[in-house]
Image 1 (cartoon, helix red, strand yellow):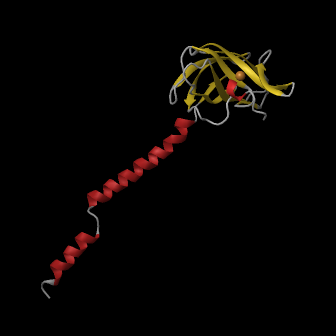
Image 2: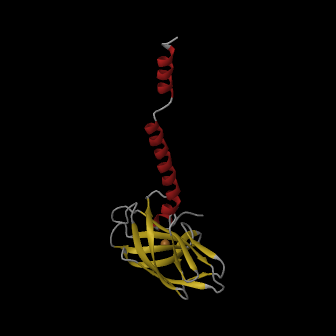
Image 3: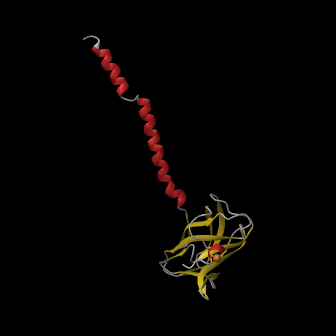
Length: 185
Ligand SMILES: [Cu+2]
């Protein structure tokens, strides 16, 4: 009987993980949770000016030698009067234009938006591939995946706001660049 006790103790020690190991696993789980909690904040970035919110400006990496890149975001107007996006500028290109897609003689084309883009009171406008979009023309360098580049948006009433375009991969679905002009959507 006297030799049963040491055996039981040995079993107990082997059965339960040592405390420091439990602590380490606990910390690993905690840091993983914190990591996931941070991801939405990192992916979704937004900017405010006056009554306007500019959500998630993004662009795409371009192949070497490309002269244009698209720019996309959503503008939400929380105010009670309409506003108007008048102009865009960025150091990444000589010019930045506001484009819309349209059909001419049965062919999908894009053309500059005349007189700015209205953002209705209490409404929102999405600039996205295949619809309204920005076009950075005369690129001075290629936007690289994973970087952010600054740009200035100027609205008629809210004024100017500096935003950052997050550059996504070249294969990001849809595009507002020249390569998509023949997409009949
Ligand atoms: Cu365009």
